[in-house]
Image (cartoon, rainbow, N blue to C red; front, side, top):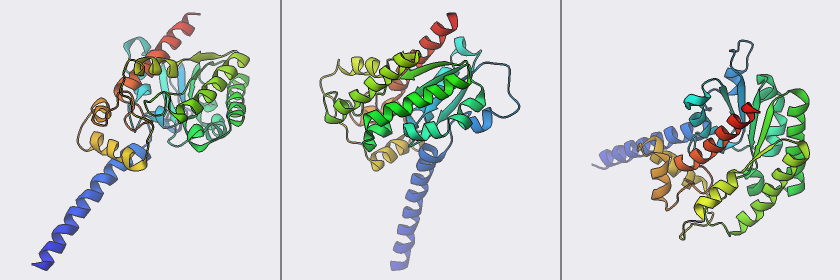
Amino acid sequence: MKKRIIVSVCLVLAGVLATLGTAGYRAFLRPPANPPSQACGDERGDRPVVVAAGASITQGTLGGDWVGALRARPELQGYEFVNAGVNGNTSADLLGRIDTDVMACRPAAVTILVGTNDVRDGVPVDRYQDNMAAIVERITAGATARVALMSLPPLGEELDSEINRNLSGYNAAIREVAIRAGVDYVPVHERMTGLLAQRGDRQPYDFSFPLALSAATQHYVLGRNWDEVARAGGRELLVDHIHLSDRGAAQVADLAAEWLTRTQAQ
């Protein structure tokens, strides 16, 4: 009897670990669709390339995939979208891989959405601004690509929290870099906070790895879409206080599509 109990417990634990392992791999370790390592080799198609550079919000394996949403739009079928998002990246990390993950793709357009991890890590705003300026300078010096700097989404949905007050300084730095470099600024933060301001019961920032893993498990194992995952936690645009729900991802995709369409016509 005791042996059967032990075996049963071990089987249950093995099942749990397998489930968490599947969710963890798909959310944290699996590369995005069409990463630079696959898309930017010697053999390339004739379509102009749009590189979306950033961190996990761009990679889109934990939370809504706004780059994939762009790729699926009929009006943007003339572009090839390369996802150069890497989980956990800071502005310094992105600067270090600009040549291999952006310039090697010979892009016609580049979107940059990075800085959430800088905010969380307490990177000084002036250092962040220097990194962003260096990223833009490297791209504009080496290519004729159109460049869009995207402001950072809120962290948690309580807009007056301390971390969101801190984040505002980083978004001001993004705008300043865009103005000085003569590149475009895409108001992701402004769009999302405008939607969140319509709600009265917003949750403060409380991200943790277990919460992110729980969100991944709900999506990849239980089959819930990212909006359902967000609502289950009392949120609307963020599944785990950082990463986007499907609705949150749609806001970024809408803004990116508007930018691409507008700049293409110019």
